[in-house]
Image (cartoon, rainbow, N blue to C red):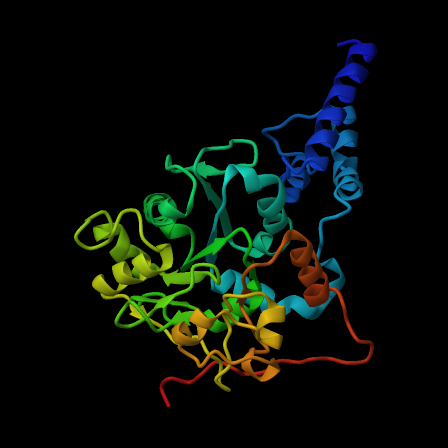
Length: 342
């Protein structure tokens, strides 16, 4: 290949990489880049290619200026990293084609990158984003069907990839470190699931879909074995979270208590401002199993989720939680998991 052709090819590749990064459609794995630069015996690269790959990660950082990183935490995240390997969480995000460039992109660039496995479920497959299509029309009337098909797909393809399986919406914000800390005191081999507890409609109650709920591996196994049976689990229609709650109850999956040692909620079905200041809709006082409280004393220091979070607020939360620090203060660790054996 002549030098002119080589330069032309590099120009095309650089343009493709730059456009892909800026539009959020391509996120190469740094580990793959490192393996190529280290000279994998199966991949013989010319010196020019090696030079290109050496600078690729720098280019990525420059182009993805709006993506948060946790590198500044340095050695402060040892415990979180330990739990990340010990408490594996698969996150699946319910989204739609119209939300990919806004809500879903915000989720992917902020909290969801801390999941051990991440899937976006939509009505149609998008191989670029990517999303997994489950061939149902969009709309609230089909949220139950979307959820049933999503968990079925995860059971068939990803049950060995995680210990816990969390469903969230594309306007849910989740603090994975707090979720893993809570789950570290739970047994994934028990038929149980957790979320923001509503006490109506289902005998044992059910969990708000918007706040997100997380199933144990055993809960997913039971669903995978019998969840397609229409006499056990409604396949579509109705209110998604309530219908899925009925399904879990019929399968013998227990509603778990996720409040902390001080009785404060960890999963939240509204945004932070609403839970701090109040102003709940009337129905909430009849539904909430923990008394529809408001204020700082009702929100756990190790909160797991909030709902109705816009992309702008998602970026703000990411900054406040992972970047803003008061000088000279160290928060330390609290033991807030309840000891159910005592």
